[in-house]
Length: 368
Length: 212
Image (cartoon, rainbow over all chains, first blue to last red; front, top):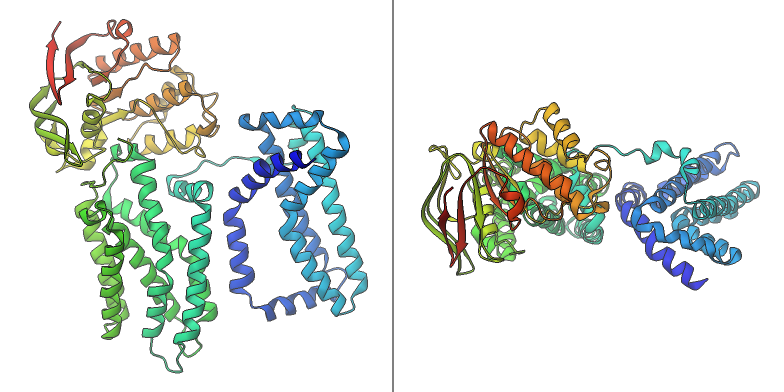
């Protein structure tokens, strides 16, 4: 059985968490960024107070189960995974048990939340709700195993997939989305680390630099330092287009569109930080200040991206480039230059650099 | 059609290829050379994939440096060993490149039908065989309204039927006025094409070797 669990976790579980890295990332940001622990307690107390409202949990966990089952059956149909059908000749008991453990791995986030909610139900003495939740979690842990077993036993699984046709529908991907797919497919660990580090830095710096006046400069310093880990994602975007998609350079791309697309991608990548700034920046600041901080962060990323097309970047002195940008911005903040002027100046420098450098690729083509 | 002047490409100080002056009139050119001789380097430079010293001008006035967007709209390229992100489908790539190259929907569907790639283009490229990838890259290489198509080893990994179809497709596009630079080691199939001249890339330069 150990070998069955090993092979299934190396294939199914790993691929599942890779494919849904963004889903979990957003979930983590909402659960631990947007909501404070007191919010969770308030929300769950409210839901647990009614037997009807706890059906919200059941709905959420059922949807998550459908997502897992859909993924599993789709995964089996892929040509490279056909070998998994060999599992059907293993002993039934071992297979059921292995599939049960695999489902526990996949269902773990829901189980973790169920444990938290159950703990609250015990504390609040909502024993009926506790029983419903435990029963539901047990059932949710068992019935998918039967579906997996059926899918593995019959290579023609078109019927069992029919129920999940909507979830399996493949949308056409616009170019705008290519990089995000690349991130989730190939660089999900870098994404998680850079976002995690950025969140820690932001929250830590907000605590350290908190002031009781409306001076915006400490927040800009928070952004300048807290957003730095995201520069790794800018480097990924650059490499994605200039190394992974070398043929992209043969396409007649209008530079202003290309630059705007890059800025839009960076703006999306920095949305979690915007949520964090809104949630945790000190109260004495006007409400629009986190927006300024966010725009400042996007402008920094766009400037770094344009800078990567310079010869200095080709010589792999990326750190010099980051250092120069950081020092320049720090001085601008220190000497109280208007924040909108700084943002404008950074964007302006970025666009000029990009327009003059984009069609003069300096990066040595590594695969030659 | 295409003029190269004082063209030079170096990799970290190592000279890959140098051409003082070369002109291709409209036609089909067969570029020969041993492995590693610099054919792909030359093709990539002409396609605008990598920096170089010198000038490359299309139709006497479209300089690759000065009019990069227009130039790339008229010069297409299909690489020898195509590689695409495994999570993208063939349709994703065809839609994107077709849009960039201003390809009409009829052209897209005609090419897909002609090379028989419709059955698998909805699948991610990670599941393609080398022949399927090659067909996809060739469809991408013909999209739009190019004046010059660069085909780097277009016949490798293809089956006999597909090879014949590619030869016919080159002939059809040539009749429409499109020029070709082709590198290939498959003499038999290349001999069926109306080759204007053959060139050999060796000793870090290119030389004319025959003219039918």
